[in-house]
Length: 327
Ligand code: ACO
Image 1 (cartoon, rainbow, N blue to C red):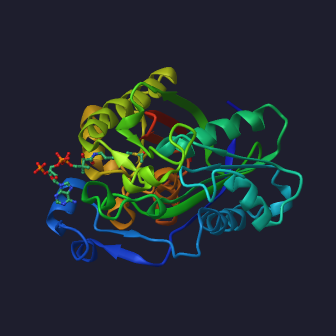
Image 2 (image 1 turned 90 degrees about the horizontal axis):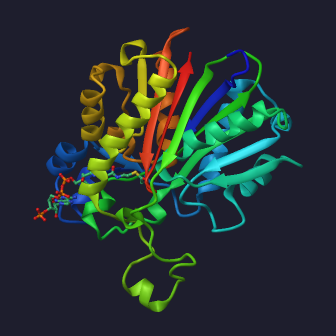
């Protein structure tokens, strides 16, 4: 409809340091062959010790503002999707606001794990349409290396750090957000979680000893659920808009695992060539993964005017989310 939010600008940032599969082999009992065949990941980026999630967010945000040719003072809403906030509170969005030099703007973090960026787009789009805000900065940023257990080979090979951002407005030139679907099923939180450090299990010597401040995952169960809920999120959104998979030109899926993307391609009966993947270079960057992939694909000139894109994500929660974009 004529009242859809427009992506006025896009930006992304990945830390310089590359951690390759070969380097991981020197730390833990694994192999390049195992990691590549099970996940498709070859390397990931790791933020430096003094680089926090809000710093990654800042670089991506500046990139998006420059791309949009929007002055930072025009932004009146800042939403940061992350599961690795600088601190439990205050929000990473408030820290980002300060680093950008913004005043009197609405700032908050949104936590929906790897679905976080698409959730944040949906929320920001709704707030813009309400008329209460004019221009939003929506960021997905993660320093997952800060919650990874580097002794757990079943998880540490999968994740990386990064950030992506968009500037959203109600008028102007750019890809239009034409529809959203967000959902969740909170029945099995332990499938993928950070058990300790919150109100449920405050930090103690015992939680430290059991390494419960690190990310824990049941990979096999998450894998099965991921393909199922991403198919649901994609198909349901298409149905609601009277579209079929053939109408979609590009899918930008959450970049968790190449086999999950292949499974989704089969279940949606959409050729794998329509799926944009850069996970071999970055691993799973959670809330940053979709904007990082979308920005890279756009810079490669992949999106042509009037083409239709589908964003589709799943994450801890379990959460899922999808969005339609008219380029
Ligand atoms: N190197 C070598 N061997 C390993 C490694 C490793 N890095 N990790 C696990 N193994 C071993 C296991 O110990 C197991 O050995 P065993 O059979 O002797 O016990 C064997 O490999 C097979 O393990 P599985 O877990 O069955 O392997 P699977 O084929 O399921 O692949 C993987 C594991 C890659 C984790 C897969 O399950 C997966 O991708 N799951 C989804 C993960 C995901 O996407 N998470 C992100 C969620 S998004 C968010 O919100 C953060």
